[in-house]
Length: 427
Image (cartoon, rainbow, N blue to C red; front, side):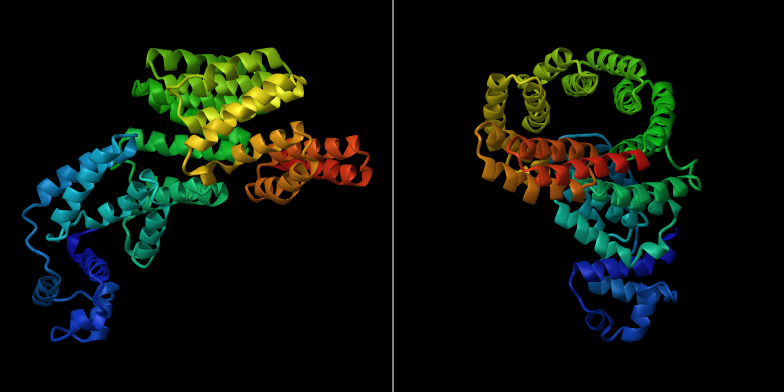
């Protein structure tokens, strides 16, 4: 999309940012209705009017710094693509923002769209949402490249809020746009979207689709010798094959992920794979192997507290299943310590619920256990459509009621578990 076509959107963006009304910007230059038409791309104003409007906004129309802007933007976009130092990302962002505030650039809109991704990386979800709302009014005029990122980053936003159905809708729209601009996108960008779609299908338990997209991404990553991303694809394939009970294929993919993780000396990836192997052996009913892999993760200080907390939740359930209540208590205590280390527990509430569920259960605090599971935990799982966990914790509550001879309540929650199981089959 050329600069002249974009000029109205640019003016609208800068006016909004400077909190000027249409009347304040139009005063003495054009009528309010004419400015509205310029901003909404319903007319193309003369260069003289554009100059006057830009002067009032303090913007340089002469884009002599365009080469520098493009170079700096490309560097910044690559920082957002992989995990990088947040301080460096912020510094680069502020430098670019300062240049763009004083220059009319044809790259401005792409920069504004990338701000969604930027705010998500920083964990500033409200700012990301504000940016999405701000750009919605301009999105009808985006070209295919801009739409590719617009839909992709909105998908990232919904993913961050665990709304995987909406995220998938956005990613599929982004994939559709990629077909129009395949020569403008690097292969790594195409692979990243395929991988992201694979992860989202996995979250939605669309197992065959997850396998399809993980393989598509894997083909590209192998060509690019990006072994770290290859390992992540193998993890998705491992999860998917485990779900359809093709355990040998699952173990093969997990072992490939472990091998590539060790080649890259990537401890995070190694321990993620250990977590997945633990879950696989748990599914097979091999608690000894499951506990071995889980234990690898939880005492590794290099693993983030949040990731250790996820494994702690699995390990608590494993020890409880084999009636090793002493070790269950030890791991619960460790989990409670980890919770203290995490400031944003809201994003990881599921682990909080798991730990306290077993904590109350083991301490025979029946009222607290029933209240937590019925009023908080099960509704949380229903809201997030986590049917696999719904089966586990509905059954746990049903078993509890059965033990205390509340058969009507037990029957109700066994039915809940069966309903959740049916949802998984339907998915």
